[in-house]
Image 1 (cartoon, rainbow, N blue to C red):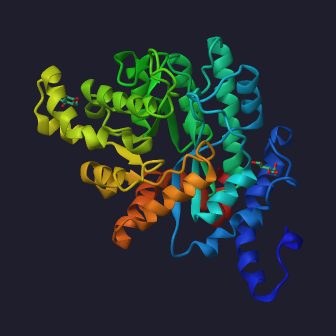
Image 2 (cartoon, rainbow, N blue to C red):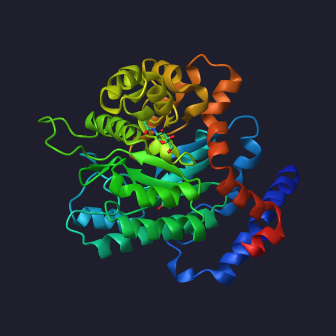
Image 3 (tube, protein in one colour):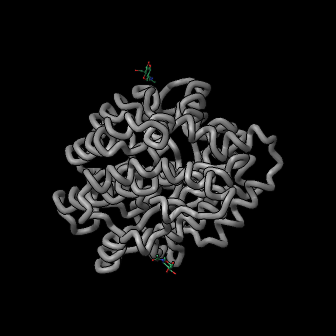
Length: 385
Ligand SMILES: *[C@@H]1O[C@H](CO)[C@@H](O)[C@H](O)[C@H]1NC(C)=O
Ligand SMILES: *[C@@H]1O[C@H](CO)[C@@H](O)[C@H](O)[C@H]1NC(C)=O
């Protein structure tokens, strides 16, 4: 390790210091990990020192990205071979180098990785094939968290509407792989989150105080002719899931769950008052209590930090329920940079900016993040983990 760390005077002490924090996890890997399944060779990826350089550079400004995707080569190949895309968006190529480069440019300290739609329940897959793919994705993501401690965390992939498999995978991923949370699609084969049949999974997640990232899927039914689903239907899908969760009182019945809605919650913040005022026709609850439930959601800024989207999200959900999102690599780099510039240009106090960019996510993920921060700083923590 030491030889690969820079030799120039001032740089050396900082890097050495930082590099040493990675020696233990790396040793652990060498001793305990199945090296054969390491999904990329160390020579092609960036060095650990390179990945860790942010520690000094981001001291005064940093972000946690809660909407960032990974597309391992085996997943890319599987989707390609089945001619699948993500709601009309071609599945992009992804690798760690590209991802870390973007993160370093935008001062993203940690990315919480998830797979995008279509997840692991691919069309034509039986239950066992889906479970196997979910497991492979989760093991791969876990490997990234170990190889690049602190830079990557992940939302575990489950296999809804397969309830039993989802519960087993959630327990394994959260308890054993130390996933930061789980990602669920707004609807799974037409069944929306909030459906009573998913309650047993909610119970398991609630008991672990899980943060659930809700990612849009294609909306059941026909799309508008010529308009790919990711353009607009994705927003409806997320908004529907939020409505369904509140309507079925999942937010009330499982208060230890935290929900992050993708893309500013679709258009939920914009339509929040209308939804709160209209849902009570069905639930007979007061509009106030419905609004309160709708405001328990968090929303990320991915592709939604425009001058018209941000005010709506801020007005409805407030600064302390927003997280930074990039949607890498499904959103092209230039779009991510534009969107991030819009967020950075939006008039906000430093405190509020920091809440959105970092602090809210840091609070939501304090447990999984502190696990790795302990690995950096304490040999005992590393050995007992
Ligand atoms: C990562 O992907 C990019 C294309 O997006 C490619 O140019 C680059 O060579 C890849 N890097 C590695 C290490 O595979
Ligand atoms: C939602 O669930 C909570 C907790 O069980 C309960 O107190 C509340 O009355 C429920 N709300 C409705 C409208 O059923």
